[in-house]
Structures are given as C-alpha cells and as structure tokens.
Image (cartoon, rainbow, N blue to C red; front, side, top):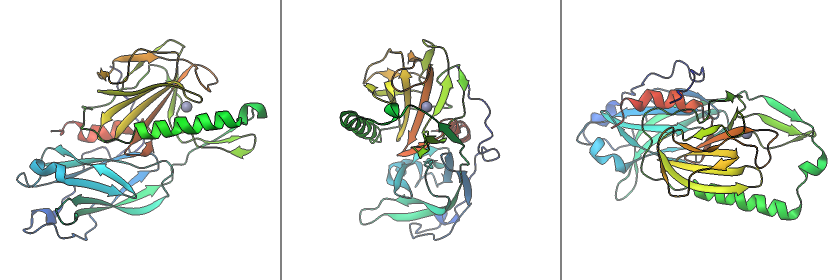
Length: 305
Ligand SMILES: [Zn+2]
C-alpha cells in the first residue's frame, strides 16, 4: 500500500474537530439553531471533514435523516463514533468568501436546520501554466467539439448518483510515480485562458501499474478524446475517482475493486504530452484536489462506524 505523502494543505486542521452543538441535546432541537459554531477555513479545491456529536438515541440510528448543504450542493452524512460526519468538497472554482454549511434533518413537512458552520473559502493560489501549441492542435473541428461535449455529459452523468459508502479508512496514491502538484493550474494556451487543470498528474513510465485509491465499484471504462483510456470508480457517498491517459485497463464496469488493486496501466492515450496518470476526484459534484483527501479522511477514518 502506498500511503499518501504528508501534505501541508490543511495542516493543523487534521485533528478530529468536534463541533459542540449544545442545541442538539436540548429538548425540541430541530428549531433552527441560528448559531454559527466552530468556523472553519478551507482552500479552494480542498476537502474539509466536519463531525457533529449527536445523542445516540437521536443520532446514529437516524443518520439517513440528515443531509448537509453548502452552496448548491448536497452533502451526504455518515455515522461516526458519537455522531455524524461529513466530507465537504470545496470546488476549485468556488468563490472565495464565507458561506454557511448547513446540517439539516429531514422531516415529513419540511427540513429543519440543526447546525450551521461558517466556512471561509480561501483562494487556492493556483499557479499559471503557459503553453504554446500549433493552433491546429488547439482548434477542434465541429465533429470533435460535439464528441467532446458528449463525453463530458457522460462523465458528469456517471458521477451524479450518490450510493452507500464503500470507501474505508485512508486513501492510497494510485501510482508510485512522481506527483507533479498540478491541481488547479490555470492554463493559458497561445495567450487564451483555458479550463483549469482539474486533477493531479503523476508521471510514471508507460505500463506502470495504476491502483484503485480505495474500495469501490467501477462505474465507467471509456476511451475519450481528451482523457484517453479512462476509468471512473465510485467509492460511495458521492465520492468518485478518475484515472486518465491509461495504456491499458484491466477492469470492467460493475467490477468491485479493492483498495490498492491494480485497475490499469499508465500511458499517454488521449491528449497527453507523455506518459503520466491524470488522477481526478469529484466529491458531491465538487472538483477537489485528490491529495487533500488524505488529511480530511485521516481525521475521521478512525471514528467511522
Ligand atoms: Zn492532468
């Protein structure tokens, strides 16, 4: 198993933070607490773990009744020792500033807010990558544009379902190669701003094994214009991992894969300048830095129920 390197992202925030929500224990909780508790800070594109202590009688047994909300995204809630936990994915392009994360309890009539946490999003300070390419490689013909849009729709649809959690414990790196720290790079090609880089690149020789970063179910195997031979794995609770530019794929849609299982091989398929693994993670629709899963999950891994 390849443990994550120690990352300085979120350093100091990796301890399990118990947000003491006194309102939860009070009779008749379910009224909007209207109290901002334990404000948190997180960088664009990072994952933030939050845990909420609940009374056993009202908490763990009823975990399915809870849901988190942040911006326009729903965040599933999972049981942890003594309460519930949430992995909040902050999208790389979420606007910097402070918004409330809201923990709601679903009721027959209307959802009730049980906790609010002020979450301040800090700028990701992503670098800029300027590239010069022959314009013929940049401009896509109409047919290719249509293909690319269709493939993007397929990708998004693949990662929409929220299934039960199968990820367990900490995550591993998907390759032994060299991590390039390219998440979030703003790319400028021939002077034109392009989409930011949504994943982490790991350079490794063609044919090097690619491992599943945690237990999950293979949701998609495809050969796309930009990402080449690609695999998407569903780890549950809206957490998906993507593995692009592969030279070989050794799994099929529907396969259950174990943590560290070999699922393919590094390559340069699709639009790639050389052999490397592009590794992406989506968390409830947010494009997040795969490396930031390490600290976030480490803070709840021991308390998962
Ligand atoms: Zn990449």
